[in-house]
Length: 274
Image 1 (cartoon, rainbow, N blue to C red):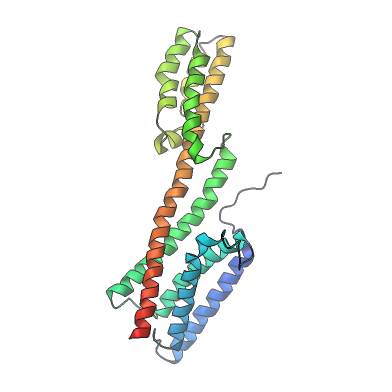
Image 2 (cartoon, rainbow, N blue to C red):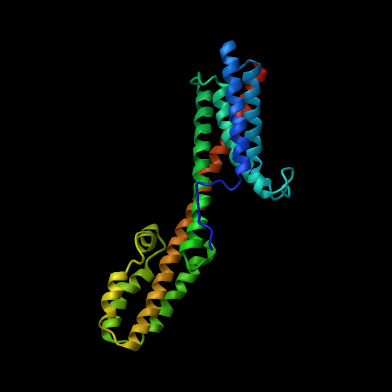
């Protein structure tokens, strides 16, 4: 029996429990200290929270090096990923606690806060993308291909369909030229992909059923083969779009995170100097 895909369930519940416990301790300690005396970002506890947040940001910045480090010192790529996700989330919360949950007082503070929020939210978007895209590809698609090979695979479908349709009746040829071939010629795009699969079982289901009623037994087989080719094109469209989304997200998330890391280091330097 196949296991049901549940995107809301974390892969490692022990990491989630540890994160929630650490978060509860951090917030509880913050409330206790703030209740006894005014919280100061430059005080002992304020600096402690800020330092831990900075170290977590630095650790997240090292995430692309996990392969060169052979997963050291965290043992495995899975541990690196979990620490990247939960550590980044914890760092964002510690930044808020470091400031005493007050609005920043200068431009650098606003940049730090804004980039921290952006990095956290874009990271959560990335978690959702990394959960949904592989699941959608594996559960709904028959064809699986690497992003770089998809245009090549699509280009092969048109000659295959042209060859299949040779010698067919005028009705089938007209249907192919007017309905099916434009789909095969259409560029890889979100519109074609989601119009064809995500919005329904197939972009041309009604048209295929309509022409099938007017064909003989032999040509019905040709139509079935043509339908399979069109379906493969639509699946490649969807796969191309989803894989492109995953790669686009990296540009959406990574550069701002490194800008944030640079500003954190600059903030530390200015604090120690002044």
